[in-house]
Image 1 (cartoon, one colour):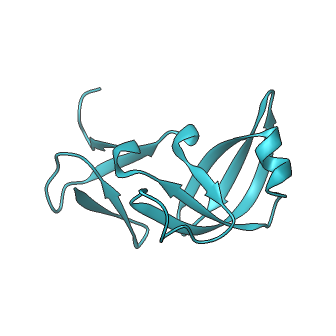
Image 2 (cartoon, helix red, strand yellow; image 1 turned 180 degrees about the vertical axis):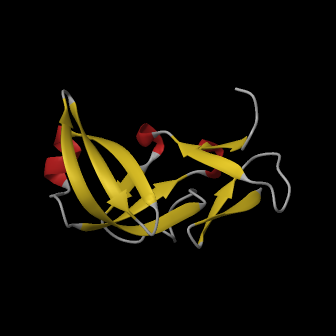
Length: 111
């Protein structure tokens, strides 16, 4: 397990990189879970960040939430989850994701 500094926030990631490496940090939107309260005591996710929903876009069968948690994140949620959780633009939430969901790519690496 390693830690990445992203805009002054620490993200835990599973990957092979060294201190000082310049990397890209990619997390697929479907791997970001949204919680209404801090799940720190009852989650296996290594990354939990307070966030604010800054934008909501319809993507056919689901919604795309743009989040600000000190750095930008995007999460996909079902319409049912959006309704049940009473989500909307400006709503404070917690964004969670596992360290294994973080894809770390060295800058300058050939893709």
